[in-house]
Image (tube, rainbow, N blue to C red; front, side, top):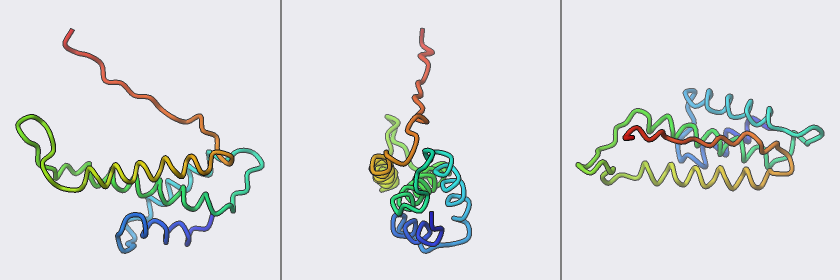
Length: 120
């Protein structure tokens, strides 16, 4: 994986000018993708740069939303704003690159989460 390509793709996906504060997102995403590589996979395959950048962008969007600057309506829905759409887009992009790299990575690290029903 080429770190300069990953950085360039991250700025393309995020629409943000690169700052040093983005480095942790790129580092953790690159490490995660390296850990997912299958034995014998070409770690210089350019598709992995796209996957790393998409994963970093997704993590960045999640962190951005975790500050919870959103406004909620009485019914609990978010009002206006494009943050939800940006997260949805970044998630779709990430899924697309996971699929594109399926012959290079181990796809067994998907996690299913549920919320317990506490009303019973």
